Length: 340
Ligand code: CP3
Image 1 (cartoon, helix red, strand yellow):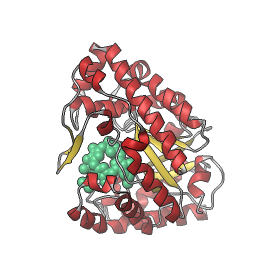
Image 2 (cartoon, helix red, strand yellow; image 1 turned 135 degrees about the horizontal axis):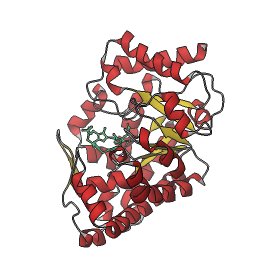
Image 3 (spheres, helix red, strand yellow; image 1 turned 90 degrees about the horizontal axis):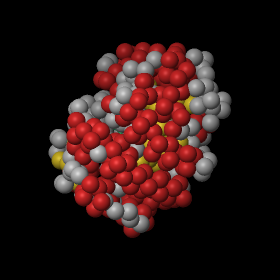
């Protein structure tokens, strides 16, 4: 097995910098778009053979890890909050959460029963893969924001109002979500994933004080527990430079940095006893190939050869990305880091 990715997570020396890309399976790929003509997003997630196929699709570009094809929102349905992906609008939660009665209705469930299809996809993947498999879950703040906003948001006004106005109910909601996330990650590890990533995509919306008050204890509860399993745990947020010390305390073998965070500044905050992942601007992949490569070179220069770097984007690939640039940048990172 190609173990560059796992070695970098443990800050061990590598033959060259490992690369994977958030949302590496998706609409920028013609094969993915063709499959989505025939199946909805949820069908792909819930059919292990299709999830397997889509997870494998991008690996031909040379990624050093696979990420399970699924979505952070999947656990919401078996908790009692069904949703769908509306075309062009992103996720839509059918009955958003507005009060304590709504939170009380959310319930625990057996992971095998409610999300068995994810575990099944992991088992199929483990038979095929020659690179490590990354499992994942959404962090409680990011999941709560979808439940409360009902979909995508820019100011997170409903979520923050809820958090500030009803702190006890907020705590209950975060606890219910954390319990599910923790169990789900354990079961993914039992099924065979080699690493897990906790996506707290929207947590950068919070001040550091609010993060510590309303979010950090819950994330810490999840990460400290999952870290005991000994597989690398990647802790990721967008626009979270101001939270890195607090996120580090909450846990993670690897901390994800977005493209706005200068790597050395971010790594100093994270601490050199942790690995880092990032942080090419996903939009740099839309530029002509030589410019995209220059941006990738800048990431490698900032890392300066320090062990413990996983090359990734600062956030997910966008659908407009030319697949040829994905392949070119991966090859560029491998070649450049092998020389230095
Ligand atoms: O990274 C991968 O290749 C693995 C699969 C994966 C998906 N979503 C597939 C997906 C992962 C790891 C996610 C995580 C996810 N999902 C996050 C955290 C990461 C991030 O981007 O911040 C979030 C916030 C979601 C929720 C979600 N799912 C949104 C907001 C959307 C719509 C946005 C969009 O790009 O259209 C989705 C749908 C979704 N999840 C798609 C994919 C490939 C697009 C589905 C499609 O139309 O084909």
